[in-house]
Length: 580
Image (cartoon, rainbow, N blue to C red; front, side, top):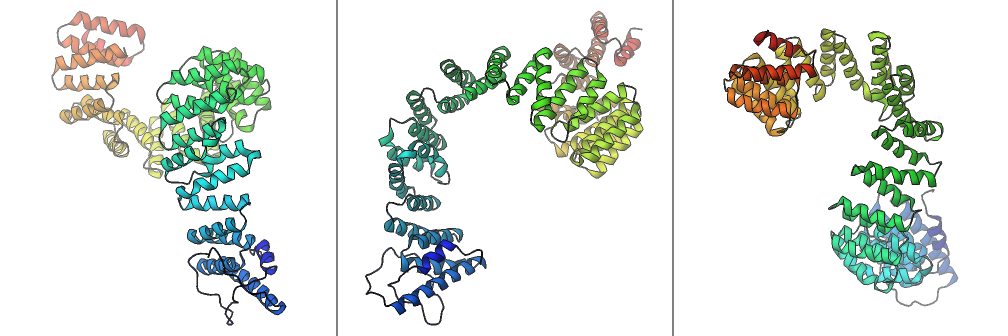
């Protein structure tokens, strides 16, 4: 049978036993709780007895393997445990550990592994197996001596073994105990950087951050050109101080100019701190040292785009398009589409966007194509066809494409069709909060206040922290002059969730105005206008000032806002009402 371990079977056939034979009935003995660690001396075997025992060994291996294959783990463990006890053969012991571990009989696995080490004390494999079983049993107290012996016996691979220690110990639940154990085990290796790196890792997992810093700095001192300690220390420091983390990387790069990974992490850290000029210097050096690396071209190009440096970004993106990995090429195509769109090259932008395949950028790229087709004279029909085709190509984006289509209809003034499409999406996916919100605003525009309220209340159920949903519903009530106290409570909740949002402040000012609290309204509107001099906020503020008798101030607010937003219908309406 394929599942039978050939090594174990061969070992069984070659054995001479001194223990009593199996029962004449051919059945295995009752399951043993553990493998016995030793056997008493026995008299020499006759040839006939020898052949009999070999047959019994083969039978027992077959019995164990078939039992394991059929899911009878207890019988499999019993068969192998008995065979291991009788033979003390390393191959049988190894297979016994495997079978017992598969069966989650770690007690049997432990005894078999311990006996294997007793039989073959020089075997690294045996000790590694015993260590693994001790880890599975969380017996950290017995693990230290085995690790010490393993490190001592494999001096040729000492540094690699030191670096593998924490990966080996990852399953130990007692992280603090694991750290204490390693502190003792690694005392003889105090002059080796990798030993301190292992201790730093163990300390980190044990929650001892100061201990981790101490050990990683020792590793860095012993091997000042090794990048791993610098990266580790930087990550430890970044939790409290980005500047301190960056300083570690800068110091290492200054001493080791060719340290690619550290320089790359440094450049990314500088970007996170918005030190774009400093980051660019390091990216430029990285590109100079690695001229063909598309992996490095991408962050340099994106950084350049953030700084509006298209002259640097565009050729790098084009090189990625030529020689990058498929995923890199798609991202590059998306950014090149944006570059072309910014320079009003709509045909070029469409060509690049269409080269973006399924992935993170696919939906936004194809939505941009549809928008540009509208601008390029393709019309609404062509734009909608593109979105529908894209949805068929990429089913996970169907909702997003349908929403984009609804937005196109809305922007084209076909509000009824847009709302119908929103309703269809909601019918198919009733828990899409963003779609419900968009449909609510469009319903308000069409005067369908019942749809507005239903949708916004559903958004609040789905997202109870949505300040904009509370605000939109409250403002709608205030604007219509109905249920004003409820409107005030809704907007107050929005203020609680987003206290610095000027549009929510405007809503609060407007509902206070509707309630007759002109002074309270004035304070809210002035605060909102100071943050965001928006035309609608200006209209509200001017109206309150006018009714308070401060008409010159009101006119000035409207005039200033009109200069910024000369086409604002809301400003035109309020000026016509009060100062025609």
